[in-house]
Amino acid sequence: MTTRNITGTNQKFTIGKIVCLARNYAEHARELGNETPPAPVLFMKPASSLIGDGDTVRIPAYSQECHYEVELAVLIGSQACNVTADKALEHVAGYGVSIDMTLRDVQNQLKAKGLPWEIAKGFDTACPLSDFVPAGAVVDPHDVTLKLAVNGEVRQNGTTADMIHRIPQVIAHVSAIFTLEPGDVILTGTPAGVGPVRAGETMTAEIATVGRLTIPVA
Picture 1 (tube, rainbow, N blue to C red):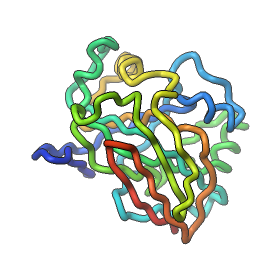
Picture 2: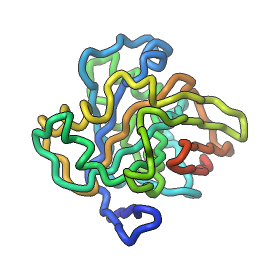
Picture 3: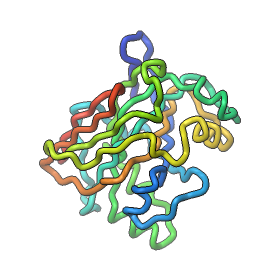
Picture 4: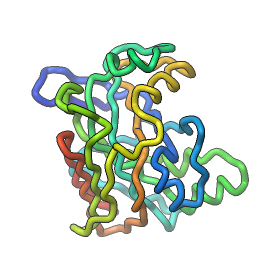
């Protein structure tokens, strides 16, 4: 079982399901040639895909194109089932930094065949995730800067202000499909600038007021 702490507190959560949003930033959708969705597009990662700060992403042998995607992570602190958007943030315990590792070649091949693409998103080490800051430490989760650098070169530099679907609406939407439990995590999508990372390189992901991850790749 993988756990994450709320920094500055004694709170610790066992991570459950990881619900992820695709195409939640318009520029990112465009850079991959995808349409902007009218409703949140969801997929999931298993908790077994989690690693922490300083741990290593290991690219599977069945892929030749592994991409990084920096994302704001939302930690659920209390059960949420069919919640309304105006009550949704009451269920948030904290915010963290994540990198949604994606085997782009595998994903594209499976999408072209109309098949699910979990093996491109949920492989072991596919979800670097930081500890969380308390929800109250982030004045506005829709106004923070996300950055990702590879070997010190900035590749992504965006803002959560560009989210298509905001966090309250996302929580309301997800909780109407399946109940969110304490320790569940929502990854809220990535801004433009995604691209490949290779063995021997190091990623640094940072979200202002939230945290930082340094992740080598093998």
